[in-house]
Picture 1 (cartoon, rainbow, N blue to C red):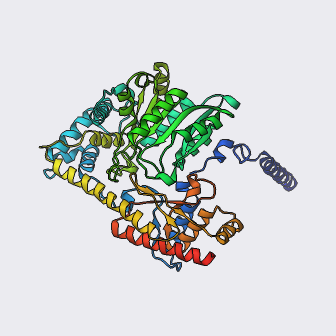
Picture 2: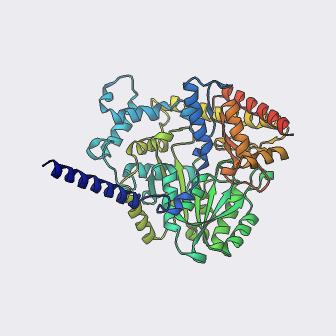
Picture 3: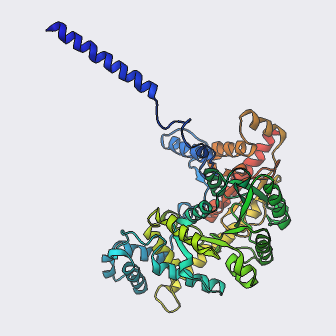
Amino acid sequence: MRALRALRSRRFQAMAAAAAAGGARRGRVLNPETMNPAIRRVQYAVRGPIVSRALEIEQELREGVPKPFTEVIKANIGDAHAMGQQPITFLRQVTALCLCPELMKDPSLPSDAKERAQRLLEACGGRSVGSYSASPGVPMVRENVARYIERRDGVPSKAEDIFLSTGASDAIVNILKLLVSGSGSSRTGVLIPIPQYPLYSAALAELEAVQLGYFLAEERCWALDVAELRRALAEGRRRCCPRVLCIINPGNPTGQVQSRECIEAVIKFAYEEKLFLMADEVYQDNVYAEGSAFHSFKKVLMELGPPYSEEVELASFHSISKGFMGECGLRGGYMEVVNMNPEVKAELSKLVSVRLCPPVLGQMILDTVMDPPKPGEPSYERFQAEKKAVLGALAEKARLTQEIFNRTPGIHCNPVQGAMYSFPRIDLPPRALAAAKENKQAPDMFFCMRLLEETGICVIPGSGFGQKEGTFHFRMTILPPAEKLKNLLEQLSSFYTKFVTEFS
């Protein structure tokens, strides 16, 4: 009996060893060799390695590791509420009422917020924001978006051309998915501005489209030049089939605001070259510079009249994350499509249905932004005062940023005409370039990493957005409170002077 038990034990051990050996031979189904190679090419600087290091430093500070600073200032991303901006009261009151309808009994909440929440809840399945909506969005919200566009542009807009989305980013990626096709020399090429917002380069890498960069003219306050578009298009046609032209206005990361004349020229160029236009207009409320004004591509296209208004295909995008709202975490936005082929629009409807629907709470916020309190309503004066205060403070911080940076020899900052960022150019001495090479880093990454380690200020190197060869930049948000921003700018400028002295 003992011998039989020993034999069974040996067999069990042999089987376990064989299983272990087989498991080792089998390996993981998903590994670096078998994963989608396109994902490896995706880079997103705004949340890249420098931000990872910033999070590590925050943890080190919590653990008591000595640093020459007491906090990390994350000036890397346009997250208004994280930077201290207070939510707009009416937006949050409506949101709270939609989430907790029992608050309708609270006498401290204004009647117009309650009426808005009632209407929105009636448009939701089961009168709950926890239900799915229609895939393109709640019909009532789409109608209000169309009315907003008509008031803004003075031209008609139809709810069936409006698709609500999880912020603007999701909508942008969906349009690119529709546009990218072909292989080899017939593969879709997409013209994007350089510097660009890294969503575009990341999405194009994932979709394996061909990125065609056109340079904005830094010496002319990041102006868009049609001659440069022609150069990029001609270069692209030698290796792919350019079909798409992306515009960011107001600009991210560059903060420029395009003139109406520029927009007209771009539309005519898209018509002549048969390009689909994508207009990223999420910063349309953020215009600060005297003489600058936001002109939507839809408005200019319609006012140009035929043949442009009838033939140029356009998708434009807006979001609740920016502007005066800053509701980044609630994820709401929309796109409007113009002159889209009806069969393709049906396919777009199918594509958005795969994700079921955008966040319903984000749609509720979007509705209050598109259809704000009107004169005479209880919330009107407070809403207008809060909106004016946010945009006024941003305008002052835009001026302050340019002024302080340009006092420092070696830092060159264009006027921040709009959006929420500055994109200064920095001169770096040869020894700094050599040190960066030794550290296997781009020169502006080397500078930004040193800045983070020595001051706790987190900004994003220009190499993450694209820049002309031999130039170096960084992007930082202007969102921190004015006094904190002033200290940040002065500290950053002082660090730059010290850095240049060290490597001179």
